[in-house]
Image (cartoon, rainbow, N blue to C red; front, side, top):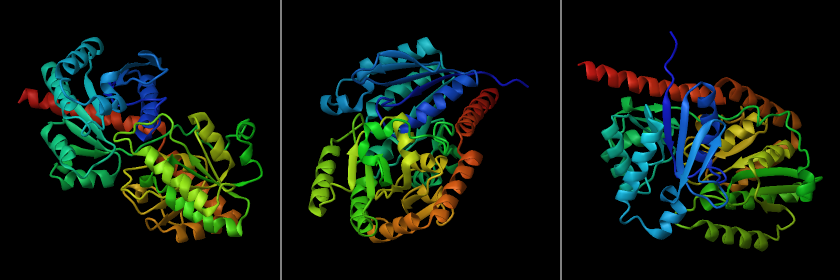
Length: 401
C-alpha cells in the first residue's frame, strides 16, 4: 500500500550558516524527507547574511529574529506571546502541517513552547519533540513535563534514560540515532585545495578535534595531551575547530577560548596547534588529512555527530565515557573510549595509533562499515518518518474510540 505523503513543519533555533550538531542533523534529514516526497518546512532563527526565506534542497526555510537565541538572550523573553502566536499561526496556515516537529524546544524559552503547543492544539496537529540534549535545571524539568508532547524522539539511549529519569513514560520516547550523508564524508574524499588555504597542514601528522571550542567539549584535554604527544612525534599538529557562527546562549564561548589560548602559550604549543574556522566542505577535506580524531567531552554528550563523520571517513576516534558516545564507539573496535579529562591516557592512545598504521586502518574501516549499516541519511530519515506515522495512527485510533 502506498504510504501517505506528509506536510512536516520543523522548528529549531538555528540553521546553517550557524554550525552545531542539531543544525547539521537538519541539513541531513530535510533533503531526505523531500526526496521521499514529503512537503517540508523549517522555522528558524535569523542570521546575518542569510535570506529571511529560502529553498534548501526543496525544503522551505523561514528565518525570524523571534527564533534567534543569540538575539533573544540579549533582548530578553518578556512580552513575546502575541508576536509568537501570530508567527506560529501564520506559518501553520501557510504550510498546513500534518506534523509539527520541534527540535530542542524543551529548554531556553517557556513562552515559545507554550505558544507553539497552543497553536498545535488549535489546529489539531501532533507536536513531536526531538530531545538532542538534556539539562539539569527546573526549566528543562518543567518544559519536558508541562507540554503534552505527542511523542519524544531521543537521539541516544542515554538521552532516553535521562528523560525517563524525570518521570516521562518510556513508551512515549523513541530512540532515533543521528545519521549523516555517507557520501559527503567518505574515505574517498581528496584534500583538494585545503593545503593551499591552510599551508600549516602540509607535512604534519594531523590530530583533529572537530567539535566547537569549549570546556564542555574537552578542548583543554586535547591541548594537554598534545603536550605529551609532541615529545614523541615532533611533527604532530592538533587542529581545533574555531567558533564562528554558533548559538552561544549565555555568552560563555569567548571565555573558554581565552583560556585555551593562554594554555597554548603556557605550554609553548603554538607550532603544534592550529585554530581556525572550517566550512562543512572544508571539514571533510581535513578529515582526509587526519590520522586521529578526538572528541573528549567532559559533559554528558547526548550523541556527537563528529563520531559519525570520523567513522564515515574511516578515521579512528578517541572519545570519553560520557553520555551517549559509548553507544556508538566501541573500545578497540572502531576507536577508543577513555575516562573523562584523562589527558595522559588520551596521549597514550594517540601515540599508539600514530605508531601502528594497521591498527589505525582497522579501526577506521570498521567504523565506516558501521556507518553504512546503521547511520546513513536514509536510515535516520526513515526511522523519523516511522515515528510520524505511528503518532498519526495512534491519534486516529483515539478519535474512533
